[in-house]
Image 1 (cartoon, rainbow, N blue to C red):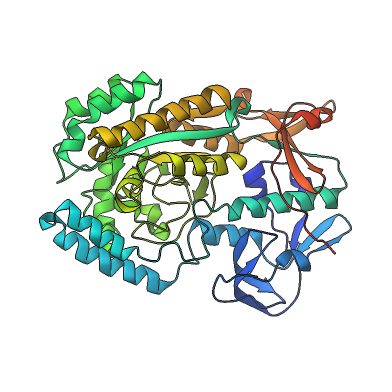
Image 2 (image 1 turned 90 degrees about the vertical axis):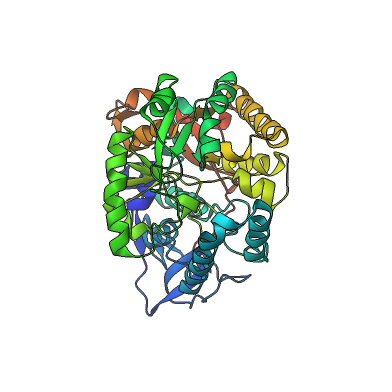
Length: 464
């Protein structure tokens, strides 16, 4: 059975380089296994039995790979593995039920709880958050590592010196970063003008997520104030009561209202309150992109995580995952008033040339101490933009680019690879090669320049 869609979608490489097949062997059982070092997988496996929990020393699927006649035979379906992570299919029902019980109690009591007590409840709920082995904290790149390993296998199977693909970001940018602001209260709404001034002082345009109902009044003047200054608006839930996905019938009623607000706000973007999500229901939302799925949801009420630092599609909706810790969690759960964790996460994401997605609430940075930390983060992002090739942009522009890239193709013209399709003038041809057993990625129009390119570490896989 040939399996190429997620791999070619990730790299946008020619199909002839992705001869990946699932090995015919029985029985197929479902569970956790690894694929090379530091890449956890969950799904059906042919042959060696996977396990039900993500323990240490998982069986390595790389040991069961067969490369033969230019084809790669895998004991699992990488399309299934990627989808299981993107849709968080690996998350147990017990975790979801526990999260729902806490949510119902928390939101019932929230109006009468002082902030100090709310923090204690949240810390109690998150006790033991450092213990789980998976997803890996503070950034999990399992999906990205799987695709890197598959690219190495594709290189070896093809016998080619390099594999061409369409680089991840326009103009050959190293990585991408977006700043988003979830506006949770009237005080936060009233602080938005000041927050735009702060962002503008660093030349950064951001996205403001606005709650349409109950939390505060949303005037036409407010919406115009964002657009006039070239900031973006995204619909943030319906009323942020924590019950958007409580049951299907209620969700459909709320989704209809959310869709009308998407038109009223003149936006194609959506984010659920508290980063709650139920991906099989996304089809009812008429948004073009969503920003509700964390990379690692270790410190969020709904656990899980998509385990990738790249955008990906859930049906017709493009998911822009939240890849860094939220400001509220950093300040009030971890009690950390520094950018050390943000810097650690961004360095890990940039190693994979991924998307750095930040959530900073106007509600929580009004005080000088928190605002100083946020301004330090902005200064750090400015440095990344100026000195390390990071594309600092907005969610709608990432959505536009990723959709264009997903429709582009590589064609060989007179011995040279060229990108075709809408937006291709911004695209760059890149090459994947193997250097000392590791995957090296280079943005260039000529493969002979590979030695001067960017590389990422992918340990040698064992193929037999």
